[in-house]
Length: 276
Ligand SMILES: [Mn+2]
Image (cartoon, rainbow, N blue to C red; front, side, top):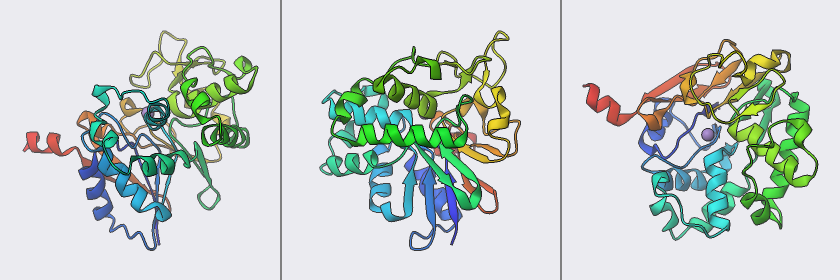
């Protein structure tokens, strides 16, 4: 029995399968956690989602921005953006079941046995773990409830970027979505900035990576997160695991075994072929 966390798939199905083979993943006894962005940009979003759907008793996902965007696109009957490479997914006969499965997934997972928080973007510095889990649970009820289409179609808003911007249910939802799925850089007060996605160097002395602003919030726990490929799997903290290592951008995919904290990697196949 083992528990694994894997970083952003973004449709990189073959690298995903290779990593599961490397650790001899056994769905009847192991559990697989994914920190989101299952779909979009890569070549095999349909295969990734279908595989997870069929394995659903052994799989948990914390949704990423691309997963939520897929839900929003589906429920608002919008055409998917061609650059997301979701055409075959949208043509799949079982799409409604895949969507329903995805919709049931949370924004955050707390694993008591590993003292570990999982989420797509990390832990917002304005929140401690308990506050974060409460906000995530409230937002999950919104995108899983009767008004899901309203909330999903109104979830985009760069201006709701700190706690003090919350003044009603929708702004609380937008803040939560931003904190759990879009955050990278924040200012000294913890206000999120959505215009920078580069490496974790300080920006103009005003913006810092989210994990640098209130390190006391995460010093006693582990956090596994994805979303930020430019970190290249590195943070200055041994208890923070940056698992998006840019497979879809030609880099590699990362899998972490939770008990041993051992990491396994699979290089992007195209990149691999080119380098041989
Ligand atoms: Mn993301």
